[in-house]
Image (cartoon, helix red, strand yellow):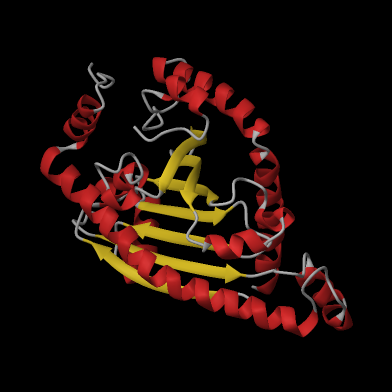
Length: 247
Length: 71
């Protein structure tokens, strides 16, 4: 079972500012008060494709887990991934095409995948959804569309619980009977019920979290709009007592 | 500056490499980014995150292929 949920949102900021806010959203709790649960952020890959000019970035964020610790304690380490009982590693892949005016991102959890895999896919565009295809066609023909002062984003969350049925998806596809056989410590149809409850609970929790994530983006965007990126970063570094961005 | 998952890499993490600087691979930022990546690679291995990464990549490949088949 996979549960998916899509929402649309419009930021009243131009596309380049929104992409910048995306990369800065976990920079510091001072910049984004809703990022206090993010313990660390690392860029493990970043390159610009010389042909397309697209920026590819892979980051790992370590977030405080929102899963109740009582549940975590009950789970075997083979399920939690053994990466610290209360933290979740999140892998974030993104591609930005600043010329065509779009950004695609995908985030997913790296541990706890034995319980639940959550994937958040976002599509940001400098053009409203109905014009996006037209705009990229125009831009391919080297006629760049005028930059809108808004940015449209579509977010899809998908939830897949594989609790107690490691690789059960594959097994079930190969042989329907296999799904009924016991797998580990939770099995058969009981596991399916638990899986779908986990998916539903996670989906309900995310709605609340998504509002916060959006509010966080908005705070970063407002600061960028009123002060500009250099001033914002310089101020944050000054508070930390570092002169990193002094040129 | 957001922290690194590996405290030992914080030093080389700054200043953060914010934007891909075109095709220039030999600028100052690129060198710093490489040092930081080197540090990070070791940290990822120590924490066995590299294994989780590979699993995630394998998994997404599988999903991509099933996704494409459906279309």
